[in-house]
Length: 264
Image (cartoon, rainbow, N blue to C red; front, side):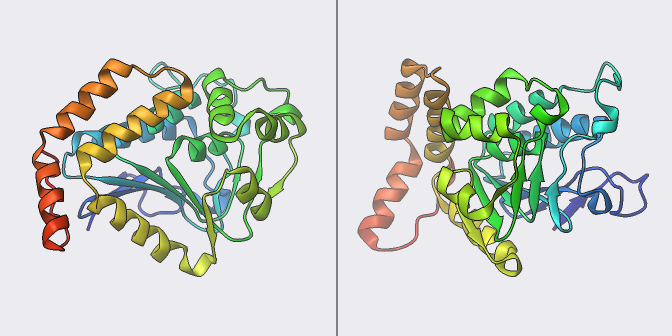
């Protein structure tokens, strides 16, 4: 396993997000457990750079996004709202948009409760698997903050307008069972089995044909936003028809063996 961390931190406590790579699976981890993995302005730039690194590594097939400790993330540091941390610091919504556009399928492993802007980070992932007992709070209306457009659009696309209004306008905590019912969570498992369960799901995704998985992910997200380019989707469909992966998948099916996809 390769672990990348900021060398100036001297440890995980208070550290910026880190990137770990194990085979075809990358993991981005939030590392401020003492502060419930809240995100500082500098962390946003770090996350974009880590996502760019994942995107550039063609050997990677899955990204897991998770936190350290009892909470997934407390969201953005409210004390630094409107501070203006520097011209290079991206907007919070830019980070969530970048995660949603990630080439590989993404799993948000919610190791604990999720608050504020990190709700949108979770919704930007393709799958959300949570530790049973977690809750979600979106406090924007309590803070007087009108949420940014792409986050609102993502919430409606993922959950529908009724559930999105409940989260954003009431600003009340929502528990695990209700998060399953409204579709925010795909699965909830005991906290002690979360890591193994997510690893199994990541392995399953990594074993699927990359061209097909990545192309269909992009198409499904575009359909959800109402921005699908049918010609581009058809071109990817035609490309898959001519791919070595399809030939391998067909051969493996007939030979009753596991396929060995190369992404070509």
